[in-house]
Amino acid sequence: MSSYGSHTQRAARRNHADKRITSLVAKEMAKVIPQIVSEINEVSSKFSVESKSDTPRTPFSFKQFEAAVLQNFTGEDGPSAMFQWFDSIEVTFRQSGCPENLRTVNATGVFQSRALDWWIVERNRCGNDSAYGLSWEELKELMMKEFCPPHEFQKLENEFWHIKQDGGDNAGLTAPFKQLSIICPSQGATPDMTIKKYIRALPDYVADFVQATKPATIEETYQLAVEIITTLLKLLKHSCTS
Image (tube, rainbow, N blue to C red; front, top):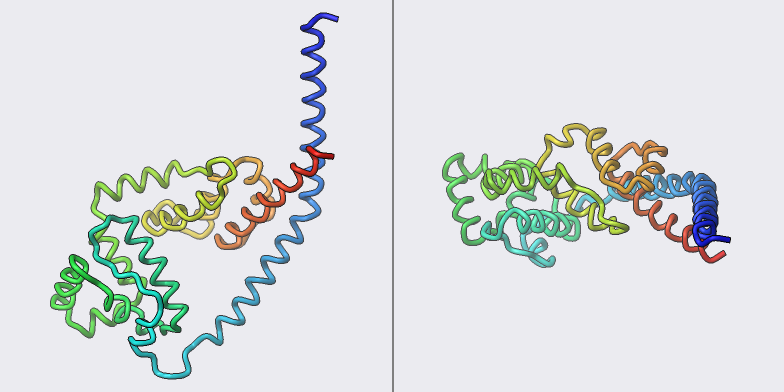
């Protein structure tokens, strides 16, 4: 038999094996996806019940907030540092039990350098009561306008526009996606738009499965992507070794 014929037969066998593996994986995923969705819904439901009971029963003080691991904010290290600080301070809110109405006063208590100078100007401009009466989300919006200049914002807009998962690194997609969806809200103006954008950023072999489950929230979409990628990798490993 000619070398060309042998090569053709090997290619045909590989193609047949690939199709067999793909078929097996698809069948197994069809079995496990309902279980994945059920587990995610169960965790979400449990978290919802628990979150109703996390309101502090005693008066909250800055000492409680300060006792948690704090990261000061200077406003001098660029947008990425600001969004890392947002994440850090929101963890601190939860760990310390900081109530909604005291989040702005406590968060601004760790401002330093340029950020502190800016906050003093804001307080003088609108008065202490109005400044400290801002919700945490309103404060974040003001900070984004101040510490994310137009040229930096344009770079981040472009990054978010072209965001894609690199290989199997789902964490490398989700973390910046969360940050950029806050910085560039126009690209995900509704929950449905945000979900669709995230699914488009996933590899096709993951996106198809996530899309088929019709996730209701972006958090559910994040969790589904992780679970499906983990399950796919296990199934592929098993299929290739069996």
